[in-house]
Image (cartoon, rainbow, N blue to C red; front, top):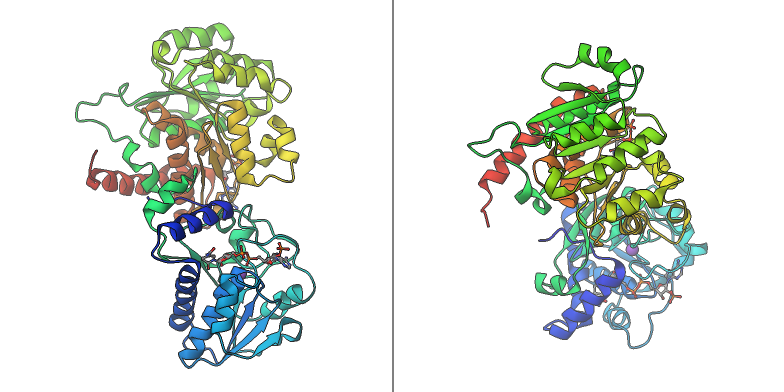
Amino acid sequence: MSNEVLSPAEMGEADRLAIAAGPLDGYGLMQRAGEAVAGVVLSRYPAASRVHVLCGPGNNGGDGYVVARLLGESGVDVTLWVSGEPRAGSDAAIAATECSLERRPLAAFVAEQGSLVVDALYGAGLSKDLLGDTARAVDIAASLPVVAVDLPSGVSGDSGDILGTAFRADITVTFARKKPGHLLLPGRERCGEIVVADIGIGDDIIAQVASRTFENKPAFWLEELPVPAVDAHKYKRGHVGVFSGGPSATGAARLAALAAARSGAGAVTVLSPANAMQVNAAHLTSIMLRKTGAIEDVHEFLGDRRSSSFVLGPGFGVGDKARDFALAVLARKRQEGGVEGLVLDADGITSFRNEASTLFDAASRPDAPALVMTPHEGEFGRLFPDIADDKSLSKLAKARAAAARANATVIYKGADTVIAAPDGSAAINSNGARWLATAGSGDVLAGIIAALLAQGMRAFQAACAAVWIHAEAGRRFGPGLIAEDLPLALVPVLRELVEARQKAPTG
Ligand SMILES: NC(=O)C1=CN([C@@H]2O[C@H](COP(=O)(O)OP(=O)(O)OC[C@H]3O[C@@H](n4cnc5c(N)ncnc54)[C@H](OP(=O)(O)O)[C@@H]3O)[C@@H](O)[C@H]2O)[C@@H](O)CC1
Ligand SMILES: Nc1ncnc2c1ncn2[C@@H]1O[C@H](COP(=O)(O)OP(=O)(O)O)[C@@H](O)[C@H]1O
Ligand SMILES: [K+]
């Protein structure tokens, strides 16, 4: 699988393992890295009048010296600007020695229109804010095309944060695998197109590093995507229960219910308080409706053993009732009650802001249904205030910490949604689109997750699949999207996935 994402430390480990395994040594890897970048420059910018290569003091700069040398050998007009001497004996020092081009100090850097900048100042080793000459170079390069080596300098490979300032690249050439900083915001925005170059670090080496972070792509969960069996009947395809809010807040539950139905749940029931029955009934056709105003009604419905997953939160209202209902679902035994999972969203999450440990304890019972929570930034801060406030943690690390604490799958939503499982696995989503920032969009996501859970997908895989499918539907629909459009927009995405699933070899 090539969708592993390596932290800079894991990448360093991969480098060490690859060097130990041979045949390439550190300088050999650097040579391959430089070749990859030079290849991109030559193929993408054949008309550039001049290439300015900016080299830092570490191995990122080392890659830059290789690029400068190779471009010079190819007849390109290259100017080399350096910000510090490589450490004696380092691979970068060898690369600098091999490059005979004149070195100019970065402090004097100037560049003319029509030229191209190769940013090889800092990569994985970025350790402090960009200041002085480097920050000035960022400003000068702002009006020119930039090819970044490994990462745009200033972008943290771990978190995607910007340290001081950062280059805005048109193309970023990274090596072996992407790093979190290529996928998390704001770093992702600074990378431009990302090219992942093979520099001779094999899949076996990556497997040894055993990263627990992935880019969320269909290959990661396609095998588990439910396709109805020939002898399917509606309850075999899973039954989703969606708790509705009161008479003036029923739309969110219906959006989730419709999305669940479109996502393959065989049956969906909206569980409505008595005073909202009429408004719900007026808007539901294939989706069933059942009066569920008090906790006794929830127990009775659970006792029917029909429902395999639930959505609680969209439009529901904050308070005791949300807590009681959620805890009643989580108290079911997974096997006996047939309840696979609970998707807790919006008001469902907020309701536990002062009683988070009650929720986490309920989710931690060994035979409890899976808990999937879908907080946006505000909801995340209510349930995990200390984690949210910890400035040393990236969004990825925050989602991971939250999932471990809650014993839940946590979908930390946003333009760079992170999905984390209690076992430490995490995925970063990258196919989202700004069109999804519309009221009710999250309700649809909750419905998709519940449908996939109801059809037997494991929680982390269901969460990853739902996030990708939701994002893809929004991306393809584009301008004008409102949440009502999303359930139908899922159809072509699901069709392609089911076709891909049926073509994929089983086993
Ligand atoms: N064989 C391999 O390992 C391979 C590695 N590869 C390449 O190596 C790169 C990683 O190299 P690296 O570890 O040397 O780190 P790098 O990003 O060059 O920076 C470290 C230097 O910069 C300095 N510094 C940092 N931030 C600064 C700032 N804001 N302002 C000023 N100074 C700052 C920092 O100083 P210090 O923190 O020590 O004070 C240190 O001197 C990786 O991105 C890839 O391109 C490829 O060739 C494939 C094979
Ligand atoms: N700029 C964006 N790019 C990509 N996805 C986005 C963006 N903004 C929001 N989203 C996605 O849209 C959904 C919004 O959910 P949420 O904030 O709960 O909205 P609501 O409560 O109105 O339904 C989430 O899945 C989120 O990841
Ligand atoms: K760089």
